[in-house]
Image (cartoon, rainbow, N blue to C red):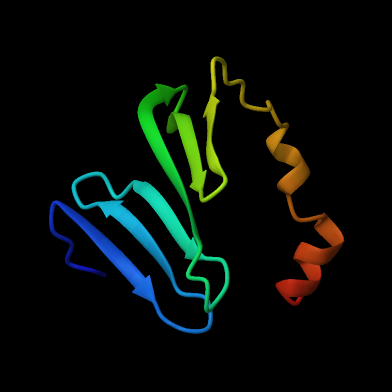
Length: 102
């Protein structure tokens, strides 16, 4: 478990360092920044904005991708979760019996 300030960052150094900006109150990822190559130092940042309830989830409804080539924005106007029959995740009886030694 991490102790985060109001807005904090997790950083990983290495050949291509990257950073996650996290909202400490919600735990939501606000942005992801990654170094694309060295020695140029070029980076790409993907930021997530406008979080809103979508059924049982809270998802971003806008994302921006920024690199030295410019900026791209994605807007999500509608979200529909797949309705999945939960029975597809059930363990088949023959496997369940084998696991319990029966």
